[in-house]
Length: 295
Image (spheres, rainbow, N blue to C red):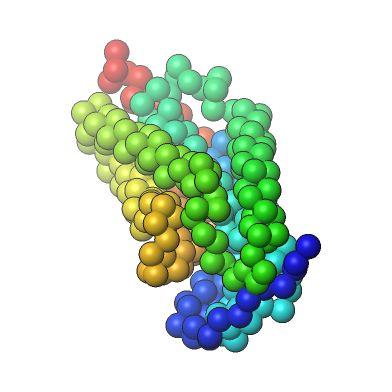
């Protein structure tokens, strides 16, 4: 089997772009993961999903140095198999990040709109079960893609790294746009329901204390889907020359996600005891106010 990879000319703009994402994404996600594990102790579903989101982003970041080298030099020193694995890390990040972000939206939706009826669902145990299922789904989808990439390696004498032909992906190419459309729809519906609930069912004091942070979470989710996830998922269908720019935009999600942690978790920078007690009290108040208004 041929393991060599064709060379291209240096593309310094993309080298700088991916290098910037790497320089920002690594410390932001490493610090965020440390704070989530050390100070929030995985005691809420949102914290569980955010830890897994940070891990997904770190997996993307550790794959970027080889991308930077490739675009800076125009050469690939490793095998085609290594290139395909690094490509899989990127694809897995887009899928897992978009799913974890959607689960965070659903968790906030249940907490605001159906706080009492869904309390038994919003547990740390169920969040971990969901996270495991997400990783299993992402891994299983990789199996046919890895087979297709291996076949392409056999059929081409010198394949080019990160330049996979859409036709070689066959039916798998439609999975990404369909998945993104479904997840985007869920986020839009969740945003609309939460906005309506906060506007119609909460008192003025509750609006001031809770509405801003909650709506910022949903707004950021929609922005990340609009900028990072949807364009590259549609672009994979035609693979025009500007597709690489969409890949770079997609990689920006690992720099934006830490902002989501800050707005999603109350008292993100406080000590664990203070953050836990404050968060529980605020959620209980929000649940009581919402349930009374709905009655």
